[in-house]
Length: 392
Ligand code: FAD
Ligand code: DHB
Image (cartoon, rainbow, N blue to C red):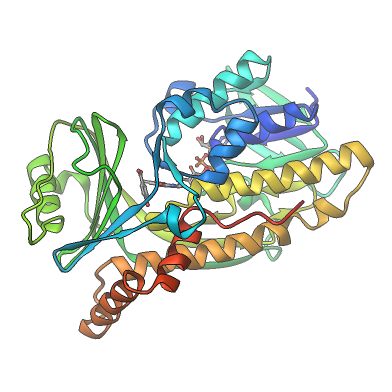
């Protein structure tokens, strides 16, 4: 088999890449280890920057998202028993965010690719990449028990943090920058109307909690827990009790509960691999970098890498230019590090750690500052809605 771009991974990065390349007349094949059903039901991110949502609309896959997604103009920071609203739109010249589940984006992209005759091979096994420093890299895999090989001009490693692409780069090429945060998030999806119209990021002495949503009937809630805790230690009653405590206000705000549809614990990590390229293998999204989820950035950062890579491939195929491909990693990493900084800052400000009372006071001062200074609130808002993209 042959294609122009062999894509490993059918997450948001791989699917969006395949879709945008198709619109530029560039062929790709997507290889995915899991089933289509698994990809379409895996509950993860929920917040799209306006730029990400605009990209989906402009590329023709935003129809259902525009109908079903929830436009938000602000978020709430809750601490000291009170709410402090950050008016994202007012502080950023009218920009907004869109609450729409990542798995819905994935469903829309899979449907668009398959409708256009695109090739996505689900349930493939033993994926391995090779000949990376030649002009004809290849991907070996098994499909239905049969060994196959895909020859391509370029390989896009979109296989997430635990994928095989990044580890296939020879030792010594990549520099890894990482930080393990001393807490995790327990997330639930609940059949309960969201108790607030806007997201609430709550900093409480017992730890951080976040209220988000997926629809007017379904809430998405998170609470800070220990990385070593098992989900079995958290029966539903304990989760609701803990959420109620962390969301408490002086005015007696009440959380709405309901049946828990799904729950899980996610560790928190900050991670960057640099450069995001080796020979003809390019890394995109979580394969290259991970941010802690507090800034709602992982999916958006994956989409930002895709934009840069599509422009670079287009310049290569349309005009034989290699300069944008050579500059891919540097162009992506400029944004990656700013987003790392923002995600780390939101995380440390809102979570409780064992660093001690001194740091708790600093974080409260930071919250007080960000909710009382227009300059500080603007800095939060412009990062949260998404930093602008440099002209191509
Ligand atoms: P992934 O979504 O991980 O996709 C990689 C794909 O590659 C997967 O389908 C995987 O099955 C496949 N794969 C792996 N190995 C192989 C292999 N060997 N061969 C073939 N296929 C393979 N981000 C936000 O922007 N906003 C949020 O609100 C947000 N909240 C989050 C909440 C949680 C609880 C979590 C866990 C994450 C959250 N994120 C958020 C982060 C976001 O989900 C990720 O950044 C995003 O999924 C990255 O997309 P990706 O395509 O790079 O990788
Ligand atoms: C959601 C996840 C986040 O990490 C975040 O910061 C906000 C919302 C969500 O899943 O809805």
